[in-house]
Image (cartoon, rainbow, N blue to C red; front, top):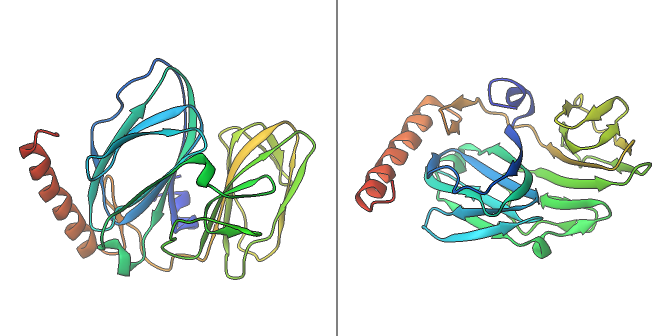
Length: 250
């Protein structure tokens, strides 16, 4: 999804990318900017290298999470750390006005630091007795779920979570319509529980949230709530770029 299609319906969730690469490793994209959003990258398989806004470098292994709250603006980058298959999701979340021009937050979680409840790993928010150590910018749940063929799993959205969707990384699910690899399903606004049945071994992510009651004003790498905020964020990104060029990092 992007801010111009499902992102408008499912905000604060405004962008989702399922990446699935198999082959040689590569250094990956050069540093690139964001503002006005938070990004959460979840790695289901493989490993990726990263460069955070403070030029700290490292490797995120399978099961790990990268959380980047861009605020007024930051630059980061990464690439594939080793040959083979690398799979995962990158999600963008729109920030509320009080945070969209705020400070940058950069956190990397090792797989063992991501808590689980049953088949669900809690990437953001809480589910059952498990919760994420990441501070969510608004009431949001984001879960990564694995089911074996024939297993069922029921998700009850918290009170006020009228936004609900699921995206399939692998396998085939019934919810009750069949959902397959690469599908994203948006559910009607409701407080009703949704039951998923795995028709084959399956992996998917699920998001629910209180609706984001603000406009989406997108730039190329940014999403803000107003044109003024977008201009401020993009101006700050440009000022950081000048410093990175002077330091020889761009």
